[in-house]
Length: 113
Image (cartoon, rainbow, N blue to C red; front, side, top):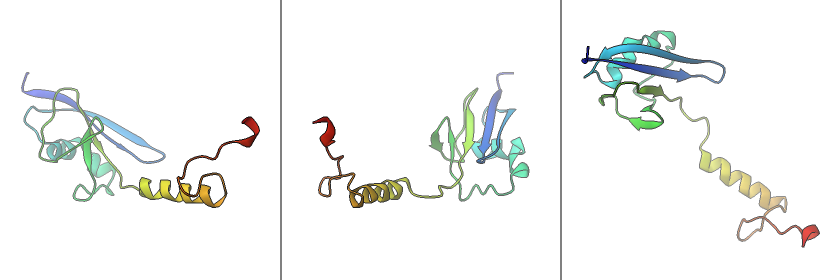
């Protein structure tokens, strides 16, 4: 039975996660495995043409194959760009006087000097 692999397919929402374990042919692609798992029927909002997928937190192509024990993860789109959020927090800290207006670094605490 060396031509079969046990793999997992995972998808998570903020309040619910699903991990399905299935047996697939050794040459099955990521896209084929996702379709065989039935997760697309459970979550009709999944759009593989728009959403990224990965294996153990590393993005892969839908045409890639997997190894025994791999977990295919279907990623939800980001709600906000992490770089923009960090930039906004830094600007707010500068405006509130919690950060140096030139360097953006933390201001020295005068109480502990």
